[in-house]
Length: 135
Image (cartoon, rainbow, N blue to C red; front, side, top):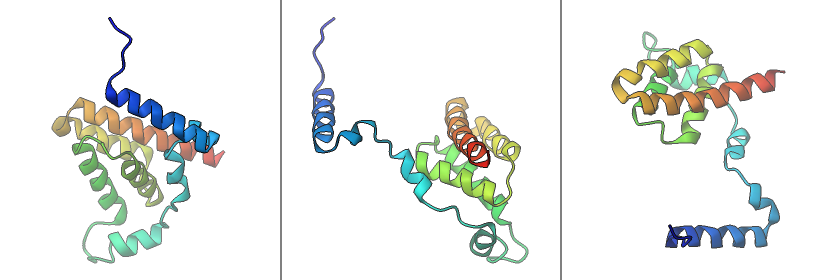
């Protein structure tokens, strides 16, 4: 086995060193922190935009957001930030942790266990953050 690195690994190492040289704080930078800067839309506004405001007899905002979570899970929960933000918004719209988990678990039948597992991990992160914020 050799210790040679691939061109990609060399490029990433060089980019990491350059970022540290520009700003040492970038060594521990995480884009996940940006999500907390984006506000959660209040429940009443979500209901106006995405719920009964569209159709008096239609789906409420909570149901629409749970359907969005199902769709994002079906895609393999590849887009971390949109997925986590949708969980945040679903909770704001009144979805319980159990409803979110059940929505994601239901998708295992259609998207597969790896997609469901990935989605559960992302949702759990958000729910843990919410629990920490409440304390």
